[in-house]
Image (tube, helix red, strand yellow):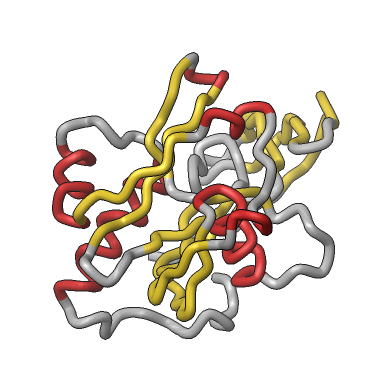
Length: 198
């Protein structure tokens, strides 16, 4: 079956802020008519599944106001540094949020976080050969990051946390499950960090 070529016939801008925008598109539909679709245009992100030499994954617990509570997540952040390549951004986030450097990065997965209403995507890297950022060089955390809790959990236990509903952040769920599967396949599914985005 040939995919229908949807097209935007009108757009109304609703909001423009520093992190995301909102607009309403009138889009041609497969059934012959049109429909209005609200879209959040978001800066994309990078995330890191950091695994140490005893198969533990680094998780952070961070307050997320939109859900009114703390979530277990991966070290991650917006792609908001102009000209920064994705793996460099991932390394920066790992250092800022978990006080860690990695000697090796591989591409794990690409995700659209919630394509029903936003174009946001996240590229998740696997980081290994971990070492601590020296204390004097550590990032000073503020705002929601000021009380980050950083733990290391056995990768199989992190998978169990997903299935118990203790990890619900979409990037963390995807990254943890992908890392466990990649490990079980001897890391054969990993891609080079410079692989073009889909």
